[in-house]
Length: 189
Image (cartoon, rainbow, N blue to C red; front, side, top):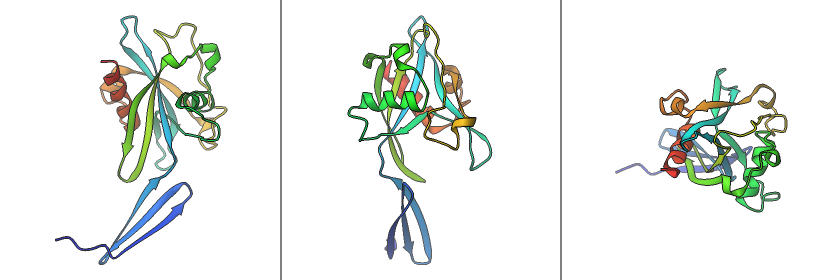
């Protein structure tokens, strides 16, 4: 038989919900997020219609002093975004700096791949979208971070091209990259 929890104390830390749980002499804190998030995995294909590469954010991780990688993540803004397509396009413009009009991006190039959930140490769910940038991208394109809402990383971060084989070989162990790539590969198989 397990001991009963003697006290649960909810609180907030910015955007995070903090639940402090006490049981006997033990205490633990759990984090969760109520906001709705999306993560984007822009990709290109080969002439044979297989996934060639993906694009991810590279930035200095302030918590450990190392270079980190993740998919492009943005919070859904219900005041601006009427549809998932609006959310994806806004994130591509603001967080990736893509000129979606110049690319000629259409809804047919955006694929809902599924959800990515994290349950510990932080509870968070993100809707993952694949963005087909071409086979290979015809006229080229440029990512910029100058519109990003993340003032701590926008000036010293960049979006990099990662060969899909590098993800499969485990060279980029970030959970969003691995999960998003798995969903992407599953969608096209």
